[in-house]
Length: 193
Image (tube, rainbow, N blue to C red; front, top):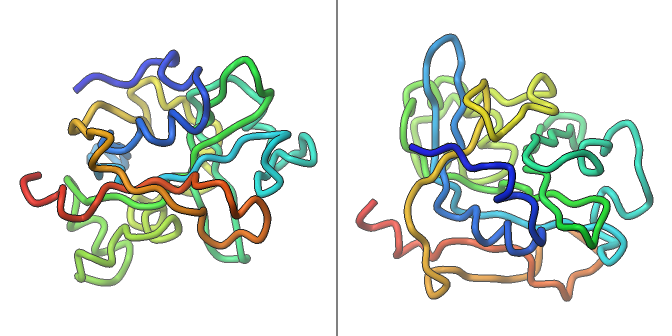
């Protein structure tokens, strides 16, 4: 499968968030491939997005959002969970990233079960913290180049048409709630994959 090129991420963050649906997030751990189809994302931009980590400017934590596109921005939240983002933005904004919120498990399911300590497939990667735990994504993957075959990268997956996508307000935020920048593949669209 083709690794997504850097140009894929050098576009409007909201468009990239939609276009990442159906792509496959791949994690390599000790020679083992663990992967899942991206089924839910959220776009976070910069000056027009008070809910974004980048809204108040560059910090040590969010500096990846201001860097080149196609790199991983991993952050720690609630003192216990990691979340993974793909840096994506166009020339209009200095910062932007797409949070990967959910995956449909594809390969390395046994590894995911061991990492998550559950064999309920519907619960393995159905949230941003669950998927990072399942794929063993930590701060060590901060800044990983997603456009090269490495320990973490994104490849083509399944074709997702616009009619297959639901959009709604982002989850767990208190600002910019009118922006419908949470995107997910309708569950019924996974029947044949």
